[in-house]
Image 1: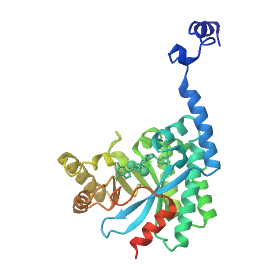
Image 2 (image 1 turned 45 degrees about the vertical axis):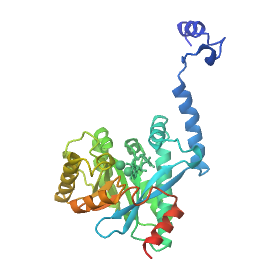
Image 3 (image 1 turned 180 degrees about the horizontal axis):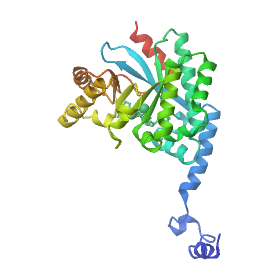
Image 4 (image 1 turned 90 degrees about the horizontal axis):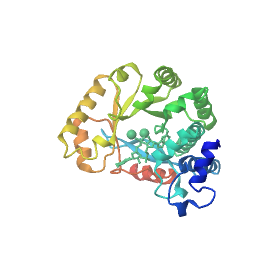
Length: 288
Ligand code: C2E
Ligand code: MG
Ligand code: MG
């Protein structure tokens, strides 16, 4: 602490009064909070109190479940935990790479479990953050994890947002093509929320674009969103890509999207993200 800093601390009574008595927030609580939360998060990863839950993705042409998205959950942290905030915390504190490698491992584990039950066609989609591109030899690590669990690369998919593209153009191009060579498909997630140009769609080898739920939650009443979504569907098909729609919460929305020609759907109408065992019984009940 510099002399000036120390004076200020003294003036504020830091050494004399508790924060509560002063009723002012002069510390930097975010950093303190970050550090202690990050430590807890790391602990949770190691003790497996962290989990991935699976949300089914439905083939809208025949109603069959074709796979699931792996979504991070920390069940013991309580229901108020916002996963997006947790991801941001992991990014700020440098934990994101360890976290994502952990998620990839868990996703392969889930795929292996699906295999044993005879669901070899099911894919598991993993979300990656832009920062993950800095993981040395990421694709090699993915490959090793796949081999370790005895699954195949086509059972894994990776979801990246437009935001990731903007920040890391060159790394992203080689990352996607390496994954494709390995045999895993790459999905452009949260389509419509970024500010990227359409160039991104043509110049990267995405297999699928996933329309953000913000366009879908009110689709039935919102004619503007209907035009946007229909246009996105036609564009994806004209570019030889699949299109998945997230945030389907009711049958009316599903009907509209089927009519528009969407390929896959995901949302609370089918199921929220559930633990792997629940997911297995969910798909078993569908195939009866
Ligand atoms: P996302 O990848 O776009 O995931 C979809 C989010 O929408 C999930 O929120 C899911 O629970 C929610 N959702 C699904 N269906 C519906 C619906 O019908 N209605 C509504 N209102 N919401 C629905 P969640 O699990 O809170 O995740 C939020 C975001 O956090 C994800 O968005 C993803 O960007 C990020 N995330 C989650 N898990 C991971 C992870 O393992 N790694 C990374 N890097 N990011 C993750
Ligand atoms: Mg996603
Ligand atoms: Mg999304």
